[in-house]
Length: 174
Ligand SMILES: [Fe+2]
Ligand SMILES: [Fe+2]
Image 1 (spheres, rainbow, N blue to C red):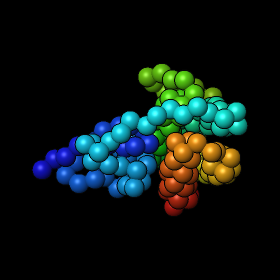
Image 2: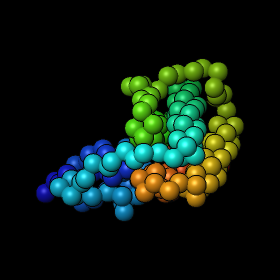
Image 3: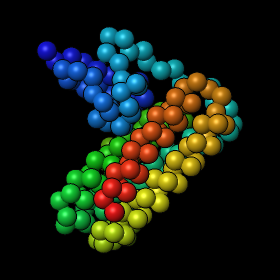
Image 4: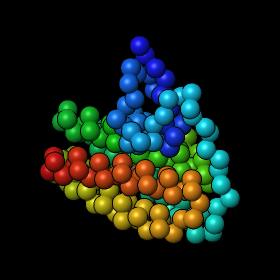
């Protein structure tokens, strides 16, 4: 029987017979996904100055990644690359949205297509992605250490796991 599950990181809902291993929207791992009946809306905490600065940085980083991946998706003639970048561009845009909720920003409805942000070269795209994901993980590990708010710590923990999945995926295809 189909059930309703909810992600405690992005708040999105999914219908499935069993809890998804990863949130279909933000990529959060199973441990962050609950039966929708048990879902409690996270409270936006009062942010420390350092967390606000780190979340602003994260928001920009996620939007930038979403735009680059969207560009790669649009320009790619390779079906697998297209599928991969369709998936990860949407996940990064969802990250911008969930981080935005903590700092009072919203990324809009659609990822803009910025033609100059990428090339059509497969290997170059994957290398760029490897760099962006490694860079994000490095930053988020530091931001996690610097955060004292429980909600902010949860968000960075989940994001580190998701970006690590992306890095693994990209490296497998290099
Ligand atoms: Fe999620
Ligand atoms: Fe992300």
